[in-house]
Structure formats: C-alpha cells, structure tokens
Length: 199
Image (tube, one colour):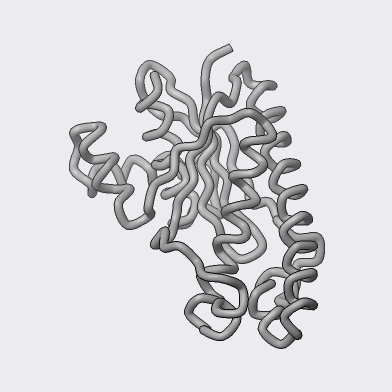
C-alpha cells in the first residue's frame, strides 16, 4: 500500500483531521473529517479546565482525569476510522502531524486553575495529548509543528513561497466543498510536510 499521513488541528472538544497522500509527487486529500473528542458536545465537557475552575481541587483532578480518558478513547476511534477510510482507497496511514500552540510547559493543576490564560492553554493541551496518545496506540509516529512556524518550515521543505503553499492547500479543498477552513488547510499542510519529510 502507498503511504498517507493524517494532520490534526485541535479545538476544544474536536479536531480537524485531514488525510493526505502523494500522487506523482503532488498532494491529494483522501479524507476530511471533524471528529468530536468528547461524548457530550457541550461547554462543560469541551472546555474541561474552565469547568474544573469552579470545583474543589481534588474534584477538579478527578473530573479532568475522566475527561482525559474519554478524549483518548475518542481520539483513538477517530484515527482508526481515518485509517479504514484511507485503506479502502489503497493507502496506509504511516504517520501523523499535529499542530501545537505555543508549546510552553504547564505548571501544576492548582496554578493552572488560578490563571485564566493557563486554563485556555490547558484545554487545548488536553485534546492534543489525547491525539498523541491515540497515535501512540495506533503505532503512528507523529511530527509536531508549532502552528506559527508551519508555513516557514513547509516553505523551506518545498522551496516554495508561503503564499504559494497556502494557495495549494486552499485549492485542494475545492472539490470537497465546505467545510474547508483554515483548520483543514493547516492540517493538510502539516500532513503533507510530515509525509515528504519521511519519504
């Protein structure tokens, strides 16, 4: 089977997922999904650290552990579903690409819950960690890119200007229709870059 990569751009409670392969050296999109990473798609569970902020510390710890376990299950299921979709088209997912935020290390839980900016960061990191865990369970190596650095890295890799790469990523979604937002474009570019770096 020919190789494909899946790219992820995470939001609170869901992720953009795009599977990309190469055909005659050019990227093609094999799958485009927006899987949920929580069972109940409400603010309470999509923003778990915001919810935990109002709890006693031990209760918050238990709630977040439960949400993390749930997110991991949903992430694993989403990756497996993408693998099946891609396999039906004659491809095998051989790696993944995940977009990161700032990448700064988070402190202990009590300090996170005391700072609203850290709460926002922690919500995103919980769902990114779930996808990393799911990829590990599926034995998929993951290339991580800081989102603000992706276009520069891809530009160097492909020796093309960032604007040209952004146009390619945009054009790839035209046959698929909506949604093809910045989420899908960046997930596509991340997957494409990761795939080329390993071929």
